[in-house]
Amino acid sequence: MAPRPTPDHRLQRLASAFTPEWVAAQRWYRGKSRTLTRVELLDASQIDESAGWLVVLEATDAVGARARYLVPVVLVGDLFSEPRDGDGVWSAIAGLMLGGGELAGARGQWQFSPTNAGSELLPGGAAALASAAERRLEVQQSNTSVALGESLMLKLYRLVEPGTNPEVEVNAFLTEVGFREAPLLAGSAIYLLDGEQHSAAMLQQLVPSAGDAWSWVLDRLSVEPEGPAEALRGVEQIGRLTAAMHEALASRPVTPGFPSRLATQEELSEWSTGAKRQLRDAVDVLDDALRPRLANLVPRITAGLAAIQQSGAVRVSRIHGDYHLGQLLRTDDAFVVIDFEGEPARTLAERRASASPLRDLAGMLRSLDYAAHATVGRDPSSGGRSQWLGAARAALLEGYGGLRPDQAPLLAAFELEKACYEVVYEANNRPDWTWLPLGALERLAAR
Image (cartoon, rainbow, N blue to C red; front, side, top):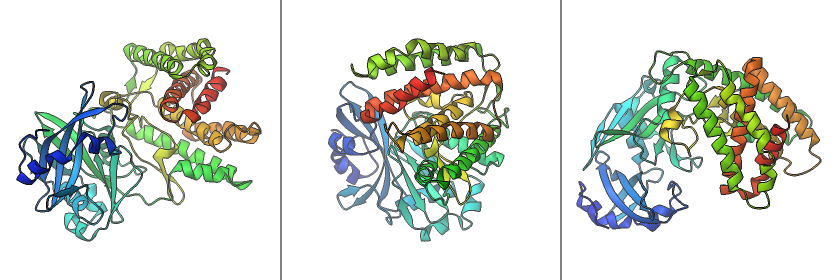
């Protein structure tokens, strides 16, 4: 491949190392279902005087689709690798954010910005990072997260997309309005190219936890008889947390991008169209053995989805967008919300769009269904788990503050849509799990 001009002759020689085979093998590469045919070195910037660089690659697949990726690189002689813990590259990137630095590339520019919370989380500022241990976390697949000491976490967005990442935007907003049940934002980084802004990284509070709420609930469900009751109390906590999050997100409607208003008829129509499309996709993705099972439900599911178009006064605001038990961390006696990126399969515009907060509730209800059934699988003697699920649904809604009667059909419609989404996801990624959302659709459609 022919590299574009870069600011260092070593990278010109090493450009050939960024092969399609190497990129396709990286877990942050998004297009694994398509053949990658070409990779070009688009830009590179050295991080201060270290051996670390920020590299932007442009990958083209067999059908001509292009995507750009951020690749931090360490150069040692004529060899390159991604940074390892202790190399100092992660700390250098975080230091640029805390200090408000800039980096120039051959084609673009990197801008790093701190927030007021940065000094609260790390009183010594960028200088204190020199003694902070680097520990790459194994919780991200499409991005990279690194713990820095005991108070900060660096997150790099590998896919370089034009626009503002909703996670940076929402975390900044929640930090500003004083919502403390989400990590504080300490800083962010953007990449400017050809007049367009791309979110590149964020620096936020590292929340000490005992794991996520998904594992916490599953652990409780496996311990009889006290565990399931403890899990129910936790679910009610999650309901209260969800209500507080939605209240915070709607608290400053004059802030651009964070409205609190009634949905328009155009929005309701778009939601309705999207839900029907999701149902069609779910039917189409199933094999010949399972497709009739869902096809028989289509009339009842369609009738349930009609509530979206028929809803009256529906409030919209910013929401979490990909809300489930895995997006909550369990602290000593509470929960903290993380990961406001939204559903990764959706476009950036879709993930930043305002929506009904009931979508988050529907996502959490579906997650509770997964938790209840994942512990017993297809075991027919799972009546106790079904009883727990009914109690958990009630606990979540009670903690949330309840629903108005006119909200119940809309929430049910969003649950149906989410379960259809799950059928598509499972069929494409975990076919052995397709039974779970398919069974949920049968139960939901029968109500």
